[in-house]
Length: 86
Image 1 (cartoon, rainbow, N blue to C red):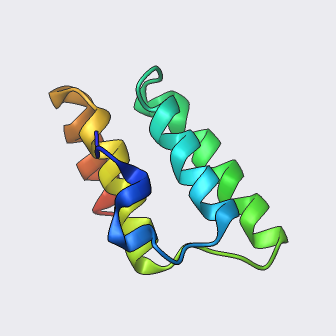
Image 2 (cartoon, one colour):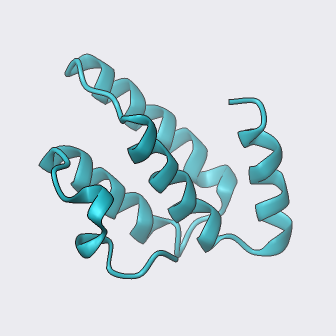
């Protein structure tokens, strides 16, 4: 897990809505499997699109890092396979 998300320089000027989403996903990733998180992430993406918002490449990379760091080795392998298609 990425420690101190709030002090991460990549998040210095991030939109508060996006920061809240990243924090929520970070927290949820501690308690849910990858299969449980993926539909939630898709729903979040849809909600952002409705608001004419999206994550920058840097924000997306941070979000992926948060998720990846929370996974056990087996789930991490699945996640990396999925990431290769993105």
